Length: 255
Ligand SMILES: NC(=O)c1ccc[n+]([C@@H]2O[C@H](COP(=O)([O-])OP(=O)(O)OC[C@H]3O[C@@H](n4cnc5c(N)ncnc54)[C@H](O)[C@@H]3O)[C@@H](O)[C@H]2O)c1
Image (cartoon, rainbow, N blue to C red; front, side, top):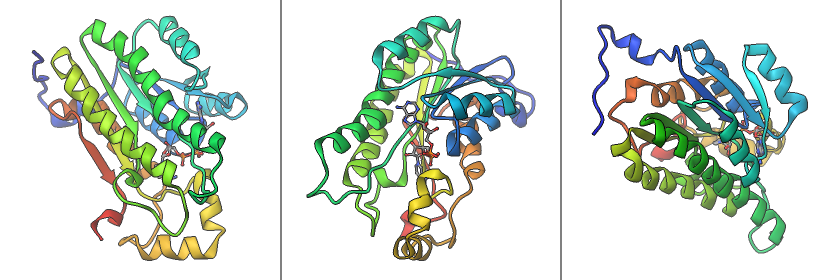
């Protein structure tokens, strides 16, 4: 049985002082802004990314620490979980896309998308989640995507879309398993966001035009606009929310 948090002021519920947060894939893009926002809310932040060249500098710039991590390496995830004293917040953000027509995609391209976006995310939930369950508290937030709810076009990315639908369903499944033991599991589902991942699309006129036309707000998100949703789901402000996927897409999925 969990209990409701006590607070005299609603804004206090969003504060993360005294908490430790680990964000995967936070060397750049959405993950970096999530890490920055969690730090601004008071958390001690660990950036865990497979790119140390960018990740170490990113961590330094926001007073976070850096841990090299490839989320697809189950042994490495296990070792990092064993190394940390405690973890209050896990943000599963590492993700990749392959824009290849389904009839042409290689075994390798299919497998790497599933391996990072689904299996690696699950390794992190399992290893860090086990620590949280032992402590009787924790909040896991995954970066899903609107692609788990709709099928993007005109670019081909069936594997990515399927992987993000899996993230949404894993969120619900783990939330149900772990709710009574104090661990909440939620996701955010961003729409198109201006990061290195979307550079190719913005440089391809047909993609860019469709993306903007089909987003009611008529623009891409800035990565900073995704972060507050994660702070909410990571914090006690969402103490009765679990298994939820919070869509942050400028209205894309309403059409
Ligand atoms: N940009 C968008 O439009 C958009 C929209 C919806 C969802 N998303 C999701 O948001 C997340 C972040 O995307 P982004 O746009 O910031 O991407 P990005 O490519 O800018 O950054 C991804 C980060 O993940 C890291 N990474 C990749 N594979 C990894 C692995 N195996 N282990 C550890 N780190 C790894 C990279 O080094 C990089 O730092 C992804 O899960 C992505 O699917 C992005």
